Length: 506
Image 1 (cartoon, rainbow, N blue to C red):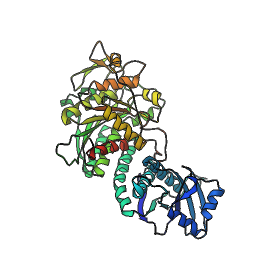
Image 2: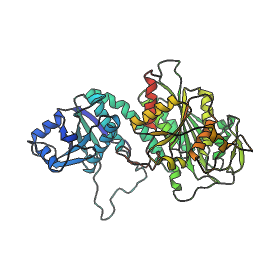
Image 3: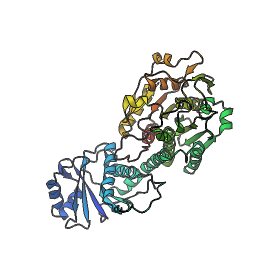
Image 4: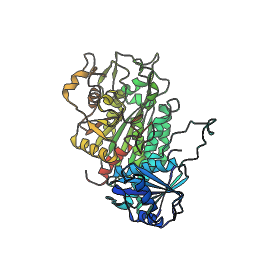
């Protein structure tokens, strides 16, 4: 089960259980409690570490087995480096989990007495370590049925099930971790949704999973094909008309703001549950990854669950456009002209440029209904963004400098980084059409930009950011807190953005 790692906080005086994990700063410096453990071994820990060439450098470890003077059968000394930033602490927590998990013990104890806790102090340090460990513990093994090891294979013990974190600020650490746990739940939801195979998670099933979130306090509304037709969301419906699986739009609302005049924060996600490309079919190689073409929608679902879970003091709405892009006798064709909800017409030259059609209608609906403070959309929109940025950054396009700067700052803090890309009228001519108000592709060059320019045509005077997450949402770079094919990218980023508005700073 994802998130099955149990996290406990206990005082430093508690006798450690299982493997003992100690943090060592640069130049092999130890906190006060770690020094006491070393003293009980008459200096054996530091001598062994020095003999192994261990210096406390980040992402290094040394193991001491059965040290005299301690009940622990093994001690792991982990290099913490400086760890003076939140992201460093999350990565350290993930690394600590990985090191303990490799030893196949059921329980491990991590002593949190950093040499320099920085902000927000030892309690925050402990909570950040716990979040990092929890995020690293994620697994998706839902469809594995083989319980016994293959013939000749070494039997594997169960992984780490409980991590006890010893701290001198136990209650404060527990309280800080509660909001962290809510964010982790949101990340895990997003990862689960993206990891699901498309035959198990179509638009209807996705919407049903969203209905279950009402138990968290979210207000959930599902719009079916009849409702979407009445709203004239023909751009979205055109994408799904080739599939036997009907399209849906899900509206998730969280009302947590203390002021009745607080404007709503709006997040919109592209939810193409499988994308064959339609009549403009994709090559077969790698098409299985297109089960993840709903990763933007998954991130929106995850951040809404996180906001509800930590009872965030904001009003927020998440809108998810769910459909499936399939080839059939009823599929839209290249050359078709459709009318969006806004009334603007679109010439469809490539049915594989379908995500922008989904967003066009859902973003228009969001602005019409909710009059939000801002709109942030997330979409696995273009392969072109990976050509530009690889898999380390998401492409960010914005019509508002302040909102763009807030997201960039949130990205630096969380490690979910964004890189601002240009928007300019000069690119508009690439998507102008002689037969309709616009066409859905703009030629070979600047594909990520023309995709964003297309979406911008459906933005009124609302501050808006488009995040192209094609490179970061799945099959991206593994990190100490992201072991999964599906990263859950965007949940922590948007949660941090929302936190700015809780503080009354905006």
